Length: 364
Image (cartoon, rainbow, N blue to C red; front, side, top):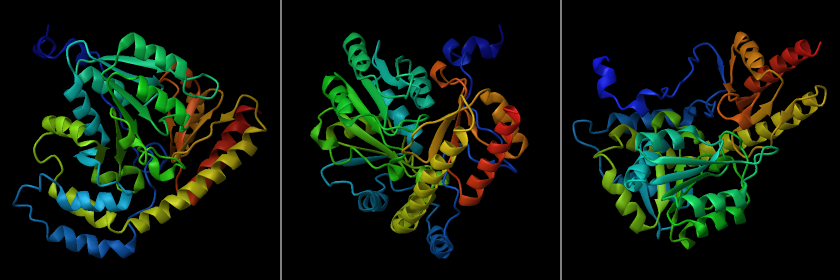
C-alpha cells in the first residue's frame, strides 16, 4: 500500500473530485453563470473601491458593510441573522460540520445539487436521497415524509428551484416537510433571482428552517459569496465552525459596492428570464419535430432537456465549440439529459442553430 493510500480515508479515496470542464474558446453554457460582463458604468467605481482596500489588514470578521448591503439588496428582514460563506459550498459544509453527530443523517431529493451528497461524505454523515417523480421531477412528498420518519435526519436540503431539474416544488409540500422534520431544513434558493417564488417571507415562521442564497447567479460568480439567512439561535451555532476571516477583503469590498448597485444586475436577470422564456418556446417548436425529445419547465437560469443519445449530442455541440452540461450520468432519472445555461441572446441563437442541425442529422 502506498503512503498516500495508507493515510487518506477510504471513502475519500473512492470519490472523484468535482470536475470543471475546460471552457477556453467555447460558448460557455455549462455552469449557470450570468453571461454578461460587469457593466461599464460600474467598472471605475469598483476599481476605486478595490484600490482603497486595506489588504495589509485582516478582513472585517463581521462583514458589517456587506451585511447592510445584502439586507437592502435582498430585502432580508432585520429579525433574521445573516452568515456569510465562501460561496454556497462553504455554507453547506459549515451546516454539515455543525450537525455531524455520530450516526447523523443528511436528507435530500435526487437528483439534486451534487455537493449535498459530497459534503455529507466529507463530514462522515449518512446521506439519504429520495427520488423525485420520474415523469416531471416533482417532489414525492409522501416518500419524503416516510424517509423523515424512518431516518430522522438532522439536516435536510431542498433546492428551490431545484438543480439540475430547474423546477419549483409545491410550496405546501415544502411546508409539510419542514413541519415533519426533527432536524434543520435548509431551503437553497441559489436561483432566487430568476424564480417567481421565494420562502424569504416565510422562513421566520418555522423554528427549524433556514434559507441559503448566493450572489453567483446574479453575475458575481467570481466574487464567491454565499449567505445563510435564519434565526439567531441557529446561525450562532453554525458560526462556530466558520473559519476565521473566511470572506476576504476584496470579496467584501466588491460585493458591497456591487450590491449597492443591484439595479444593474436585476436588469440583466430580466433579460435572462426573457431569454429563458424564448428558449423554452423555441425548443418546444423544435422538439415537436423529433420524437423522444423533451424540454422541462424551469424557473432557474438554465433549462433541462432530454434527447436521444445525449452523449452524442453533447459531443456534437462541443465539436461546434458550445459547452453544455451532460447530466445523463448524474442519476438514473437523468438518462439522456443535458442542462443548458441561458446565455446571451447571440449565444442562445448559436446553441439553437447547432442543436437543430445535430437533431436533423440524427433523425435523417
